[in-house]
Image (tube, rainbow, N blue to C red; front, side, top):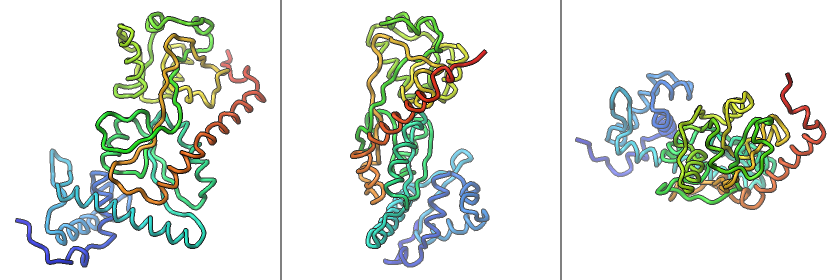
Length: 333
């Protein structure tokens, strides 16, 4: 039976180091991985967790199928860790503001297909607040949503959030989905290609659970049709683009995934009825979580200046393609 703690015991005997170690174990799901991340010996990690559990008077982890998972009390402590660390980051920002500068740390996770967008918005933000350290995590939709539930990061950039997600979200920038094929594909010069004709082509698809795939499936279903089995499935836009260039099929992806190659490169955008599918990128954060000053500064920035950052980048890429010449982007041989 858990013992009752005298008032003030937890505050008196719990250290920030213990909370830091606990947060790493809880986030990584492993004492060993936490030890590696924190450059500590595993017995030291175990000892810190034991001391914290003793101070609280409740176990924080339990074994389940050969893996560790947080107890209900552990989940409460994990939430508290984020509150404590967030409060300290806010304090640091307030101190910096008094000194006439902005500094702090911001953790952002972005969807794999947003990896073209994220760095340029973040780059614009960094030019305004160069003293802020930014940690960027790129992952697929399934893992990103897990990170949202665990409150692993300050902010998230993704496509349309799923219904029922306990989070606040607002549109960031348009994310039109288009059909892509190799530049010399027979359909590349066709106009108003029927959707029924498109789905007769070998389809290269994102993995199940992808927002891009779901949007394509919804469009096809809305026309009373169904998609044939995908010729290939990939969890990476880069792999899909390579497959397209290898003439293995056509695919639906974000138009922004061509931002480096340009629309005069080895991949063409097909003129298919029903496309582009108009979607948006969203910025999201867990509902009820108090945003740090740094996170709020980022949200204010993207609302006011994020679009300009992307427009400037796209203009720069068009200028680069003009100076290089489209022929240099085409495959040889």
